[in-house]
Structure formats: C-alpha cells, structure tokens
Length: 278
Image (cartoon, rainbow, N blue to C red; front, side, top):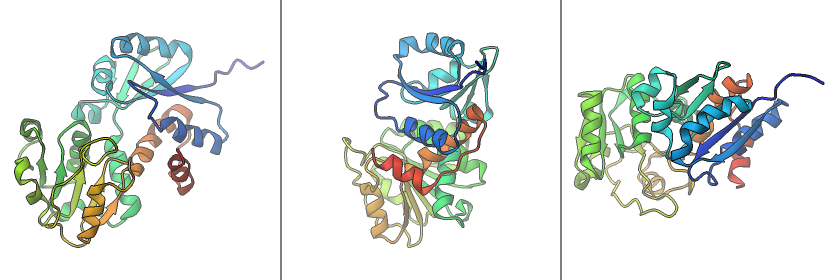
C-alpha cells in the first residue's frame, strides 16, 4: 500500500449548508482526476481556534473560510498576505507541514476576474466607480480596485460610519455619499457595484433609483441568489451591461484549489451549470 496522503480541504462556516464551494471543488477534482476531498464543516465561533489547530493533523492542506469566521481566522494565522491584511479578513487558509497557517484573501481576485470574463475590455480607471455597501465584501472590492489604479470610488452605505471608516483607511480616492442620496453616486460612473445584501433572497429589496446610470456602464452584483437581482434588472433597464455575482464565487476558488491540489483550474460554462443546478 502507498503511504501517500490524500489531500483534504474544505470550507468552514456557521452555518455552512448553503455553501456551493463543495460543488465547485468537487467538480474540479473529478475533471482533472485528482486525488483529494473537499468537505463542508459547520464550526461554531467558540470552536474555531481548536478546529484550525486540529485540521492539519488530520491531513487537511487548507480550508476556505466564510461567514462569520473571516476576520477571526485572520487573527489566528501565523502568516498573512498583504491582501488579506489590507482587507482585514481571510477567505483562504493554507496549512504548512509544520502546522502553521497562511492566510490570504482571494475575493478581490474573484471580483475582477468575473468582470473580465464578461467584459474583456473593462477599464475601471476611465471613470469613477460607484459602490453600494461598505462591509467585508466591499473592502475586498476597494482593495482590488485601488490595485488596478482607480482614482475615484464613490461609496454609500446605510450606516455612514462604515463608509467613512473606509475613507479614513484608504484615503482621498474614497468619496462618501449619504444613503438618502445614494442614487447620485451612479451618475457618470463607469462601473457600478452592489455589495449589500439588498435584493438577496430573503432580504429587503434593492429599491434605490438607478435612472442616472449611463448607457454602457458595467453593473455587477456580488449577490448570486437570485442570479438576476433587482439591482441588475434595474441597471439593465437603463442600458448597463450587467454581470451576476456567481462568477466571483467561482474565480475566487481557483487560486486556493491550485495551492491545495497542485493544478490551476479553469472556470468553465460546465462548472457554472453544475453550480446552478443546486
């Protein structure tokens, strides 16, 4: 018998039954004929530290991290990438042979690759960017956009203090608008992003007027349940090119899969179709 270990990976969250990550990684493992398993794990916040200490001993090479553990996981890591440090959260942990934990965040990568998949000529530096929301997902988007050279990001959030905190941290390129004037941030913007939960299944509707969107602007929603959100439908009605959020989930998974299983996977129509069957 071979003494080779079968690499194990997974996703930890609380709750976790909603996660589509096992389908994504399972698809790639089958597609490339690789040995390995990827499992969902329901982990209570109080058990997170013990979980991360134990998993490497059980043969795990890494895990994805989802709500509510992203910030706490960052604090428990031994090494933190510059991206994860800037974002203030980790969505990807890799376990070294000595049991140490390396934390990274690939959400920003997933965001930009999703847009480029649908709009290869996308150039966010040509016009201001409008961003609804200032939570953890918004932080990842802001870091990615600033890395690309965007010079103006207009942010509005229901709790203004969260938006002003981003402004204080990332500087004058962040322009904050009150939520009661949220519709104004899209005027002249080339890229419009919804990072709030508004319009998500089971959440409040996205009812901000988008009539100031210019024809040909890119509009993307980080939400992918439903796939076509009220935000996207309203933006498309104004002539925007709309991009759903599912591709962000798929692309953010690719760097982690490569680290854990040694193969850079492709995000394909077949993968997207399999995830949508759920």
